[in-house]
Image (cartoon, rainbow, N blue to C red):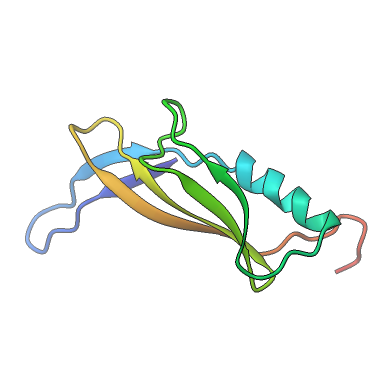
Length: 100
């Protein structure tokens, strides 16, 4: 869950809302990269906004320079309106069978 606060110079920061990030699609895309070599810039999958995933617009999971990332615009909950833009990058996927 991502909580969003405003930043004020002279007053306390106020809670603006929250959004949840569904990591299942990026993990599924990670499995796709184990079996295939993809050229940099490949769209691995596109996630459509639905009522339960907080997305404000469609979001692509990309393969770029041997990394998987997803840029997303999420609707904030518990607030009249608001959006937050995030990028999630899969940094490391250690092989459980390796000694590294």
